[in-house]
Image 1 (spheres, one colour):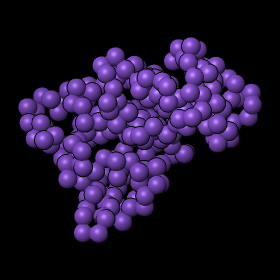
Image 2 (cartoon, helix red, strand yellow):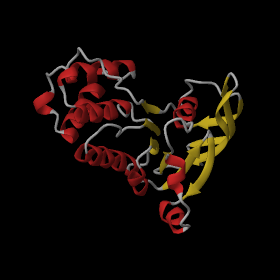
Image 3 (cartoon, helix red, strand yellow):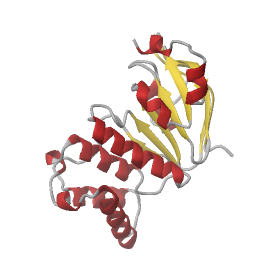
Length: 220
């Protein structure tokens, strides 16, 4: 059974159609890449999957409550790393023992011990993004939605982020990740390329590359 099923979904803002008749699915352990230039409709689609926007047409079915990491940092800048983790764990409904266990695992995996008592606003952007990712999965959601998680990061931080994404998928989480970096396509199990609110191509990265279609057209 698919974790996410989207059937003929559309969304308009006045006379502007942001998402136009989009259908896609997400399976357990799959990384689905949403590719396209800014304004292609990726973020609007993601917000509908997260139930932050209502579609004007079509159906969206999501198993469980998805973890969501938006384009901008959702961290409380004035709080420390430790305080942010505790704060979001409380919002997720975790008890004290669960929070302590998740914090220990997060700190170990991200090597955050030197930064634990540092205010988030003083962290490098790569570490803030990694912390945002870990907070998005703190409640162990079956579906994880990541909107441009590597935007603005250097090459090392981008690679670190993708290792976190791949590790999560290996544990069975279904991941939808939007990006405008073409080189990140090969990290995904499957791709959906959007342009003007529509799906213009979909498939396994290697198969799409083999078609020799000029997908760069959709990123200009």
